[in-house]
Image (cartoon, rainbow, N blue to C red):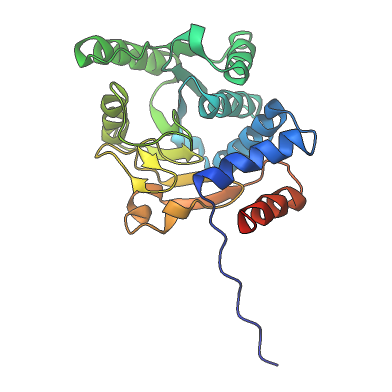
Length: 249
């Protein structure tokens, strides 16, 4: 008997991606913190499954939004698994989202090295502070074998604002590391694809719920690497509701 053709792979745009969280929270009773915890746990498991003893330290670079919150929670799960993780928060600690702040405060009660670099737009101020943070990370965690980009999420549009372009350039220049992007690489637009020459170049992109529509871009393989779709714990009815609303909109 001839098999039926495979259905086309679902890709979500920015509005649909945002709608998934809205439906899960408003109609199904999830909290945003629950969704973040599930996303971070899955991302940590994904990285841990690929981690080798020779990989040494794991550096997670977080922004102040909910993508950064994902990264902070991911750091906790990796730490709980016994892996050598460190965090650099590139944000003003007084301007974090609530979920990001909660996960930051939790980490401060652990032995995870946690450092902060203010996102000053001038490279002469930002880059020396970044280099000092990296020296401290290496002093505490040794050679870095993995870098996780948890700086910007799906809601960000356009080119990277200073100093994030300089930051991604530094992360891309690190040698002998494996690069992991949380949801999508910073500098990669959810709908349009690469929007900045310094877009983070991931070996693995752990994207949430479904691939994004921009993942069909011709430069996706070079910037996204292996795409792994992660679960945030929502039942399939959430995505069905989102797609129904899109189709009827």
